[in-house]
Length: 181
Image (cartoon, rainbow, N blue to C red; front, top):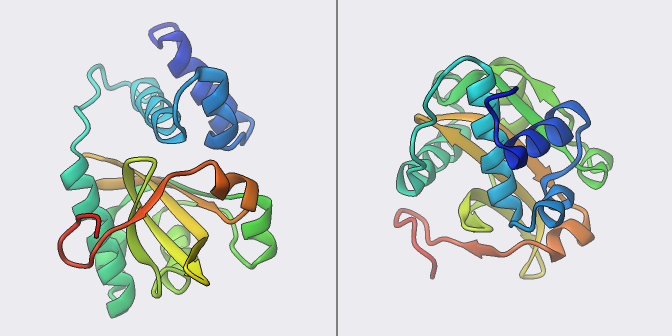
């Protein structure tokens, strides 16, 4: 923990130990929720003993999330598991939990929890990071924000609270192109 920068330490402790959503951590750090998520991911990676954090690769992150969505739509559980880090964490805000989403830890339980709900989702940029979105009436209803490291999904945050969604910049991507329409 001593090797972490103060923002990394704060994001990591608040999110991973106290389950504070990135949307609430971001204003404290004066950053976007995506940046807070990246700080926590970097801290998590460093705490696990890896000295250097790989540079973020947004294109590869979008490809990983697109492959995860395709595997869910195809019912390919093997591919779902291959894209998830063994210690992946699925977190959901209270509104998403009331709607039936459950928190989970580990590749098998996360794959089961997400495989059905994301089938109708569209690829999106969530505060500039790879994600998925379910819409209702043309507006985001549920957002799945992913943290991807070295081609594997390490965490997923499911956000459905109107207050959370209102603070996010969600840009749906066109299928197969990974670009905004």
